[in-house]
Amino acid sequence: MRYQKDQKNRNFHAFSSILLKWNEQKNDRQMPWKGEKDPYKIWLSEIILQQTRVGQGLKYYTRFIKVFPDVHQLANASEQSIYKCWEGLGYYSRCKNLIATARNVSKNLKGKFPDNYDEIVKLKGIGPYTAAAIASFAFNEKRAVVDGNVFRVLARIFGIDEPIDSAGGKKTFNVLAEKLIDKKNPALYNQAIMDFGASVCKPMPTCEQCPFKKKCTAFLNDKVFTLPVKGKKVSIKKRWFNYVLLEHKEEIAVRQRNEKDIWHNLFEFLLVESGKGLDEKEIVKEVKKKRWVGVNDYEIEYVSPVFKQQLSHQLIEGRFTKLKLSKKPELPPDILWIRKKEIKKYAFPMFINQHLKKIHA
Image 1: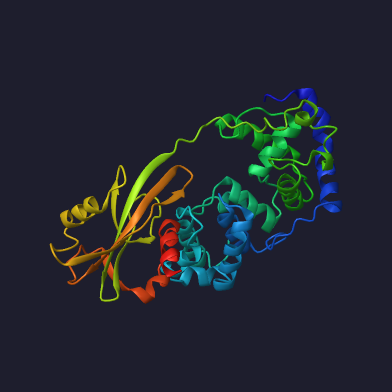
Image 2: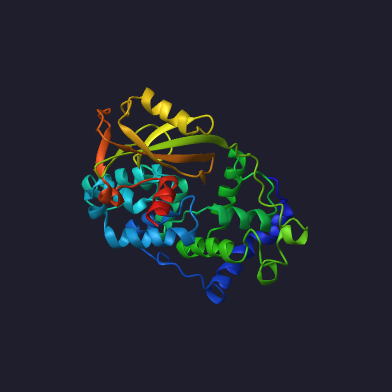
């Protein structure tokens, strides 16, 4: 470990008691899943909050609990209705795994989540962090929950400069977190340290309110804004999507994305992906090449302005071209014709919903 042994000894024993005292006297952070013991609700909240801000995830959690109040109702729902509830949250592999695990727990485990970390972590879509959260909060198992907030708190207070996204760094933080956890009430401790990182030891911290400021390595050595350390730089892939809306007598052609790619299982209009933006003539040329329209069976209704969506590792740019057809073409079997008035029943990526909201407005 790169943090100094004397620094560790100076902070180690007092850490838990100082944190729990702050939690009792100062922590007023409210969330609907806080203090929850139902493993189903804890699991839902943790899956929804992966790669998602709490403010955004809150409305999705509330929606899921209302529509699917227990694991059996989630397991028995149609995939389309579940994806519709998830629509706009992103990282759709989470939703796919959510469905698989709900069906597994409902059918094979009779609706009961495993009550220990080693069995919970075997469930699809549940990694060490989520398994620790469920085991700790639902069953009070002594497992440290190490999220981004916890990384930040430990890095600053103990002066750890190992990258949090490296294998060695993750091991360092997890070993320390397990040593620090309160043995009598691990669930309370885990919630307290996460809340502390979210409300006091934030990326822009309020050090004057921090009960650790006399012990915090980063504060004492002017390293608050250099810790924690991230080692990897994310490379952004740029893609250009030319969407084609084929309309015939109040019906629109759509398809479901089944490739191993972004937006898996969501619906979209017909897509021409290109290395750059295509003009109107180029788009029509591609549409004819794919035999989506006949030579004189269409009329261009509009070409939209450019839309953009920034994903974690990709930048999507593109536009929408709407063609009104006088004759319905024979399209590949994976393309469906749906009524325009029923389009809201289908789950689309945010990129497409931006356009739909604009034309409906």
